[in-house]
Length: 531
Image (cartoon, rainbow, N blue to C red):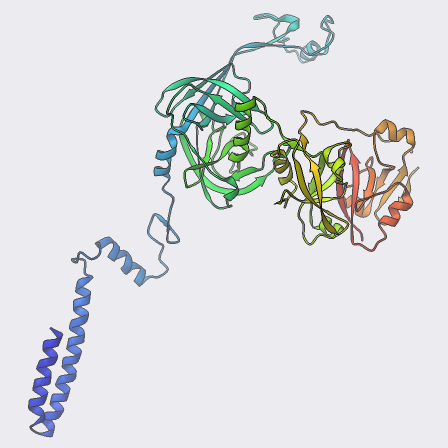
């Protein structure tokens, strides 16, 4: 159409141009108008191709484009986040849900025997406690076990789990099945199987149970070390007996240690809603892989308050392999007590930044002592694996097979060195030493400490390696947390045996000193900033 307009205008111009000057001017104007009309025609054709009647784009998409053109800051369409699609949780659950199971447990009624040595004394402490408060003595009367104990009625519980092998091995929490007399597994299609407890590991709270089945649906195992804070994760379980409940959230943090735990599990912290009954259930990433076992919540009410914790699946897999093959779990240990390195410690020991695990105590005759690790060393890596925080060290060492020699990098006297330590087996119980207080303090004014020497007999009875007892605390030492009754062992990694040595150790011009103390049978470092 636009080409015909132009051709017509050109022929008119050539005809008029041979006439008069006025005609030539009119011809030029006609050509200009024709060119503009042809441009308008081209635009009209282009707009027509993009009109709602055209099949090139759906009407809804055109409306969305128009809205964005009119208001560039408009909210993206529902189903996207900053232009990216939200996770398809429904499809994910369809894929992985059949491998998640409900675990029902029954603990039969049983008699709890009293633990008092004199069972013939009718006025023993057990019965006296109940009598004083006007409470009937348990188990005297109906169902009486009388003086031998009292009866705990039958109890039932619910938990979750997930199938890790097609022949019926299932992972769950140890606290779900530890005291169970009967365990029943229920699938998503409502099939039920009796289950056998293969083994439990209370230290990591992991248990393996087994049902008899073939070609069962199984989960895929992921790599929890690749998890990043802010990443989407999904949990499936049976909170409050509501089977196959799905909740989702994000990873809040990784490598968390829990108060009262021994540090063998570097927990995954999430904000996924987890409640009683979710225990033992899987935590999935968006690839449908299990990255953890939902285990604990942090709560002041007993219910979910926005913080939940999962056991990394690699920790659980290690436990499962050992329980299935040997029936028990062995772990490595090197025999040290450790604490985190903060900015003050880093300054005191000459580290470039806070990192590593500060050795507060080396167990006598333990692997670390034999290998040459000393109190005051900062462990930076184990077999090439960096140790950024002290909470990482127990899980790293425990995964090493006992009898293996580990290359441990330590920071000592302002430089790093490699120490070879033959890893020992983690003991069932750790021996603790204790100390008592006992006389004639002298002042260490710079730190605000009032101390006195311990006599040889005191040191033997207290089973301590220290020579100086803290009698009173003021100033910088008090602010750092030193307490009366603490025993001073060293300053900045060097042993201190007298008040003179204590004063000399603090007179090197450093703004911060790291004091090593013994308290309640344990050793710990405290940073003291000298004013």
